[in-house]
Length: 140
Length: 140
Length: 140
Length: 140
Image (cartoon, rainbow over the protein chains, first blue to last red):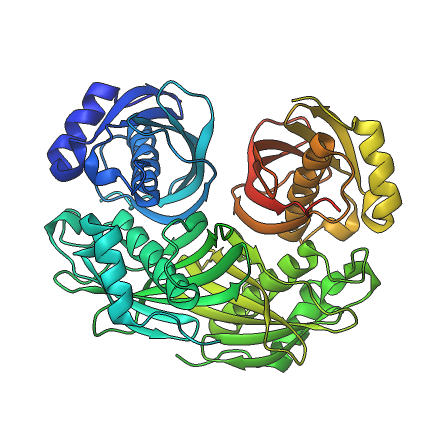
């Protein structure tokens, strides 16, 4: 399967469709069935103690899955998450961006299933793992 | 089991410990092993089309579980989510707050397990369901 | 919504379609969007120590969701589980049957979402909780 | 981290502790934080149509996680599953064994978290994916 949108096209699409969130994220890599997305960590993502909050990690996982899905099928603004299962394992390093590495395991006509591993930028230790399912709307 | 913090105490605690998020949420009911939390929906929670985003629903589920846990064991700022599994079923109504109803199913010494049902304010249709586990830090 | 199959019809259907498993389970109650299913615990469900194994509880949750789904839409042998998220909280009592109480939260055209609480027969303590999604095949 | 039990030791342990199930499974590979386990598919694992049932895949995922955990920490019969989240994506091939590839992502003192990919023997297509958490009992 070939990639239909590269990181530049994905970032431009996100900025146009989701301007509130797109400023915080950047798609850095797109390969067949895989994408890496960076969360540029700011104060609003932090919990007391300086670590990134669970909901911020959820958002990153959700966006990374969305990016890899769009990268494979092209711009479909209305794909929606139907299920997410997430394990939080380690506290993020303070003051570092997070990287979400998404992998599609199945790309069907109506459902896409994949998982996401989240790490601190520059580290291999997995902070959180998510399994996610997206519903793909039928073509008009 | 009896309740250790009522909604007023929970809201005061959240405002002190998590000022960024507490302005958006309000604990409305606390009963043994149960709590209801309101998300006061604003622009930053919305997706194109006016519905509340998945990550905003995740945040509400996370906060509702945290509230019911604190309500039962008292203020423990460092309890952390270790697992969350969430099904997204229906789109929220535009322009309405969301209500998260959390229920603790197990309150152990080190782990608390429960679930959360999310509805639009004034409606019974379940928008999303979450199963969540929190790790409780050992007492000093 | 009205019920399309009662417990007697559900048990007869299971016995015909899944004879290996049906002898171990019995649908005991069917109401709109709800079903109770009993696992008649035998040696093959046990782990050392006499408690029921995790996979046996998974099977019960899966079958209880299947029963409530069939009870609502009628006999569709090919509905399949697409996602299951399960929390195991307490050890079952030795020597007691298990009861799975399934509840449908959404019954769409292609997906059904619900949850299941598992208890030991005669006890209210929740042993395990499952969130489950079934895919419903399109009508021929 | 080094491996404490090789496949031969793991299979002998399983046969001794879980004789009912061990005859159906075989640990085939053990490496640091990784294990491969085979389910020798028989009639009792099948659904109408000849595919392996969901509960049989759950059992394989559970056993593969248990194997990799024991392989790393040594024989601890009482480790128990606390959470499992599973996506079922494709139907297994009829008449082929299943392989579960387990990977530990975190091995803490009280909790171990990992995931498992299930394939048909001789195929790369992922049939199911599981995220699992085991609780490790304190040492006596």
